[in-house]
Image 1 (cartoon, rainbow, N blue to C red):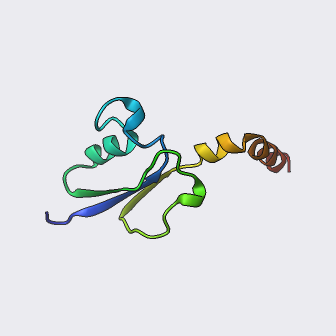
Image 2 (cartoon, helix red, strand yellow):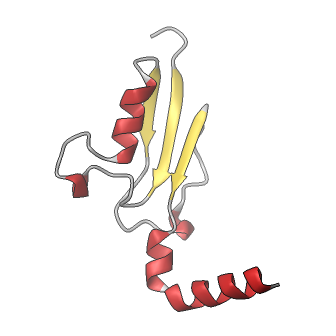
Image 3 (cartoon, helix red, strand yellow):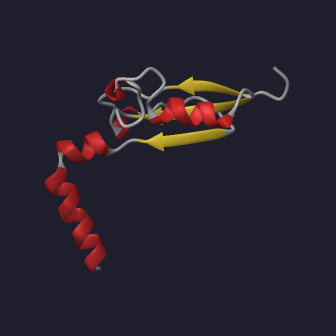
Length: 89
C-alpha cells in the first residue's frame, strides 16, 4: 500500500477488544479503523500489562500509550500519597 504508516499501540486492558465483548470494539481497534487504510497496526497492548512491561523496541509514526491502570490498582495507596504530596509542593 503506498505511503503506508505504522500505528504502534502500547497499552493494557483499557485498549484491547476483550472486555468490550465486540471484535474490533477496543480503543486500539477503533482508533486504527478511524485512521484509515493507509495505516498498519502494530498492536502490543495486552491484558494486565504494567509500565514495567512496555516494550522498548518498535517504531511508528503514531504511538499511543494507554498503560498505568494496573500499576495504580496494584499500589494505589502509594501512588495516591505521592501524587498528593507532589501536588501540595
